Image 1 (cartoon, one colour):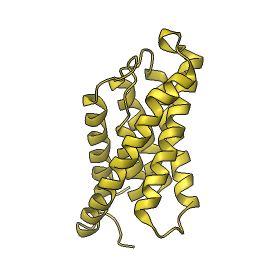
Image 2 (image 1 turned 90 degrees about the horizontal axis):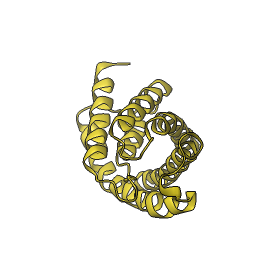
Image 3 (image 1 turned 90 degrees about the vertical axis):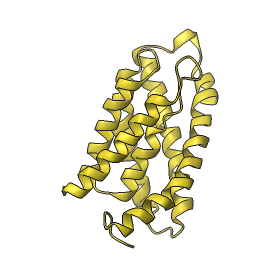
Image 4 (image 1 turned 135 degrees about the vertical axis):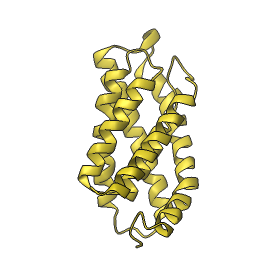
Amino acid sequence: MNTKTLVALSLMVGIGAVLHTVVPGVILGMKPDLGLTMMFLAIMLFPEKKNVLLVGIVSGLISALTTGFPGGQIPNIIDKPITAFLFFFLLLAVKKINKPIVKAGALTAIGTIVSGVIFLSSALVLVGLPGGESFTFFLVTAILPATALNTVLMVIIYPIVTSIAKRSNIIATT
């Protein structure tokens, strides 16, 4: 892994960590995970297995440190690497689609839902859900709004970041 790639991945994870930290918890400590958007962006810019593994593990650890969800540390560590690889495989599956903004938005929406379901499922099994709330309650009140927010954010920042990355030779022009 070259230094430019490592620095770019670190910046994206760092920005994701700041976003994850500053966004307040909405429903019983659940907050939209804007760090996912940065993780997905890193995977789209540097789609190699070693990069996906690195960004997934580091994003999981940082999300675990900054979570507001009671007992959400281990579910975050479980969720992020799995979501990162599922996102990567989806990205490879739609590689031939030539609408990058649409592809980025759609994959972000799918990835956020997958991440939320994995997180809630592992939280339900490991620590239970706070307040005796149901899985569906959190799906509707936390995951779906986070999906909308992450998708809009990705559609806005993806063209900006790819333009800057291409001009600075961080990623290969396609």
